[in-house]
Image (cartoon, rainbow, N blue to C red; front, side):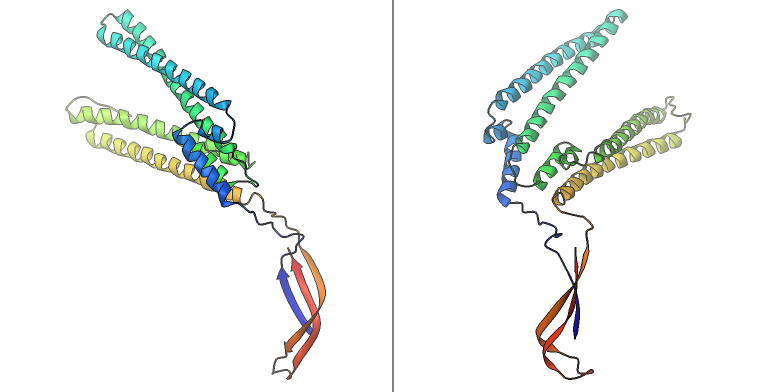
Length: 282
């Protein structure tokens, strides 16, 4: 009698192998590259022509308003610098601060329109299955967007919470670094300088080096977090269509072989063998 234990994949529970055609991946990559260079290209390729004038009208409008606010900012700033009257200086300072904020807001809006046009172009490429290329590009363009595409919404607040904490740390350490550096340069020049109660050159130098090191480390960490966000989205997209259930089954089957050789230590026999087989499927 022959007893054999076999482990294999059942056709019922086998994980389907995701077929991602190279042509689809190439279409996604081409759409992304060309849309980065020429906004609206992807919408034309996807035959969504009505979106092209919307993209250019909104982008051009925001850029024009940003340019106009920038001109007014420089005018108000020059008036502030060249005026000695305290009341006028206060007014000009308020004006140029307001125009600067408007300029930054309009330019940021134009950048957002550009970014959304690229994402929309990529999303318009038809793919038969969940596309890892889309998840990768989404996360590269906007952290967390790949996780949204993979329907892992719970990861998005973690990504933005971590990045927000790092950005706050960068801002805080950079501000403290500049303050410590100003005090250090003043003391080094023979003038009075103070930071956190420290007035000696050696102590101030220690503060400068510490805050600069912390700032640079957090800049590095935010780059690592950005890269991990892309890797996470790519890996999850590859596993999106796989069945990772824990269904298992155990089955006994009769078995016959036409070429069975018994171990010589037991007895010498060559020929057909009859036995049982244990098949574990997953």
